[in-house]
Image 1: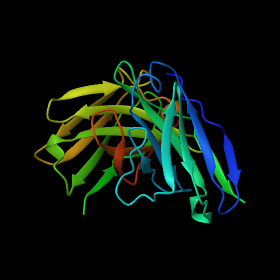
Image 2: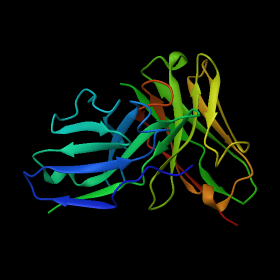
Image 3: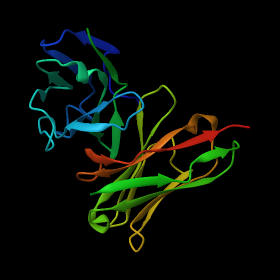
Length: 110
Length: 119
């Protein structure tokens, strides 16, 4: 089960916007609107930030938004803050009733 | 407050078995879908298994199919993961998590329990 493809790292300065991509195939990202994004700070538990491509759970900042085009989903963080520095993982339902994660992206706030 | 609390991790020899537990509280466990997700040291997240508790339907990653069994006890509000034929590559922190809907987003996570497979 190959993972979804994410960039290993991205960076941005406070106040800027960044986008993290998550590329799969028509069997997962492109075929279903069940893409989620998780934030994980070092030594901490993952936190759901976006689900079903564009939905935000209660309590998640509106600075976080999701989108999808063809086989690639994206997470955009606007007005970057120091506290956003963390690892980010995408996930998607995959045909055959499995869930697949991306390899993770380390966000550095400069 | 809703929470998940895992237990049962530890050191086990290759080929051995271990059972993980996840005690759930603060939500309707019997009508939920629950997952196990693992994270090897310094690595990313890997989905392991899912169960639709009310229907008893189970799902597994290919890497654990035939070796791991997910189950639940609604009288104890507890999720289990029975692991057998353990390999070094099964070494990881194992998280239990609650699905928003089956095999979709995971909106609540436990603190995790460490499993180390080593001679």
